[in-house]
Image (cartoon, rainbow, N blue to C red; front, side, top):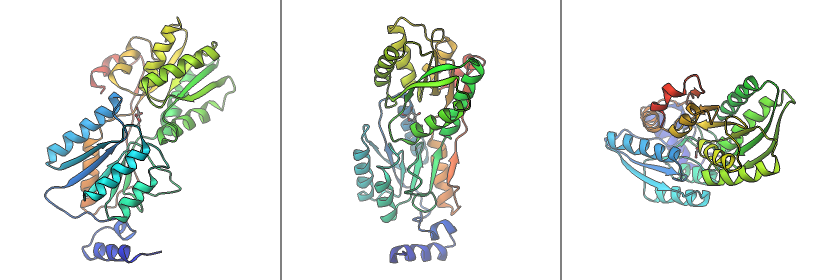
Amino acid sequence: MLTRRVVLMATAALAVGLSAAYAQGLPPLEKKDTYKVGFAQTESNNPWRIAQTESMKAEAEKLGYQLVYTDAAGSAAKQVADVNSMIAQGVDIIFLAPREEKPLIPAVMAAKKAGIPVILLDRNVDQSLAKAGEDYVTFIGSDFIDEGKRIAEFLMKEKPEGAKIIQLEGTTGSSPANDRKKGFDDTIASNPAFQVVASQSGDFARDKGRQVAEALLQAHPDADVIYAHNDEMAMGAIAALEAAGKTPGKDVMVLSIDGGKEAVQAVVDGKIAAVVECNPRFGPKAFETMQRYVNGETIEPWVKNIDAFYDKSNAAEEVANAY
Ligand code: GYE
């Protein structure tokens, strides 16, 4: 149903010659000298999040924009409240890194209703409940299904005889956890010699990853691969392996996603076999996409990040550039 507000916004958008996307219900964003920009972060308990926040802050500062920054400290409920508070403060646009796919839908819809455009950063929301180009401007981030697939393909090439795999999943209900699992599981399904013997969430966190790896290694002492959905859990898994008297990289192959310095160094040291990069330096692309939106361009529904791949062939040379 077309509300009066949407009709008014569409008319206004067309009147100033702005893009067709606005006419579909996305709130317009006018050209101004400076902006008050919201960035709703999910948590700050790991180097990936810290690097992302730094990149957003640095870019806002460079442009002379005011950044309203919130940290949901790992709570989707707090993140919804953070977005509502940004709406109340009258920010011009909200960059949102939705912790989980479904619980952040009300926040996206509330911003839309208040006439504030939202750009999703690094994680997506449930695509059956909200749509790019209608409810939010776009999703900027990696192809997580492809990340899981690339790890699986590496594994199948390196260990053609097969493997018993422990999977450490990211935050339950988050798009990278859902998709990194799907991409991996679907790829190994083509060969029954590859089996996931246990798959459990370590919440993308180092200590939780260590604890879960410890328990799963005890239950499955014959596991010979640990696939972690991010570096933090991979580093936790390495600690669990060493505590259990096993040599990571020899007794058990460790695979990861993110490509932080510590993990890329672990590839150099032979403890991690391969890492798919997922770069947290979003600042330049986030603000450039915002500028394109201000200019009235129709933004593609997914501004895709291209991920590198680290293994023993390039890790030594790449480690200095890793975040
Ligand atoms: O892999 C992880 C972080 O959403 C892509 O979240 C991001 C993931 C990243 O906490 O380390």
